[in-house]
Image (cartoon, rainbow, N blue to C red; front, side, top):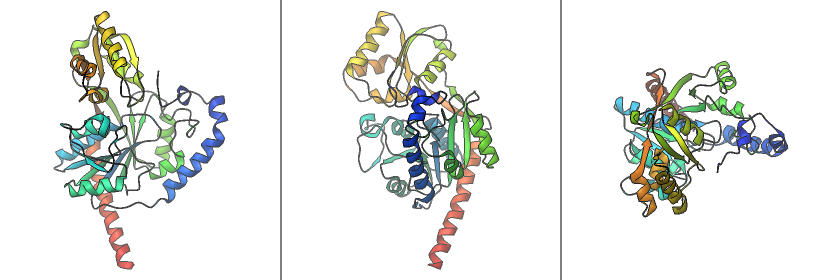
Length: 349
């Protein structure tokens, strides 16, 4: 299995994590200092950041989509801000799913653009300003909590209940992107996704720090007809096993598993193997929405795989249905306070 996250990151710390500790220590000092002391530019609208404590997916994109729907229900015009990871585009791009491909803008922005205005920019401050120009009145950042140079009004950190923060070590000895103490200090709220106890130590830390705590689950939309069927499941996400468990929860029998690296663009040879294997064993093909959009716009075997693949669509469902609205309201209130402080600072200077 190809993965950006070594398996030992998600187990009890061993000799590999310990041998990398000196590098992790230096990395943590630098990352923590940048978070604590970095100057952040302001935009005149609220900014919500949906981030992770660690490398690897915990459900940021479904969470961002849920917040955008809640914002639209509130009468707002949300705009997504992304770096366009996995895409080749430079500068600032307003994403159009009708013409752009994942090779250009990345897979996650294509999914986000189906729901709301989406801008990608390697410089998030420039992208945020473009969203303001495009008429957005709320920005939802997909990732960027540890590195953005943009003032954030509400930082919602998503954590997988089954994985937690892994071995608790900083990169490269573990999955943590910055020291936990600094990350928690700048966190506005914590969202635990799924079942499991791996996240409990961090949840207790957040509670002692007085941080709001929410729970949610990833729910599948439809797909009842997969029950009892035999399938080939392929996924190029941070944790393919999570997708495989989701497919099995629908009652399907996965005869063939095909895990790939996160955001990986499949070659024609890999696509041909999926198609040939599924035909040889009379299997239905199932995949994730991210994998599906990475195939769109390609010719040859990719077109055939698009036609034959069943996409398992999921939604992030908060246990407290009012939570997304309350997060948005908190971001709006924080933005007002930030703008008042900026105005007072300008007057004094």
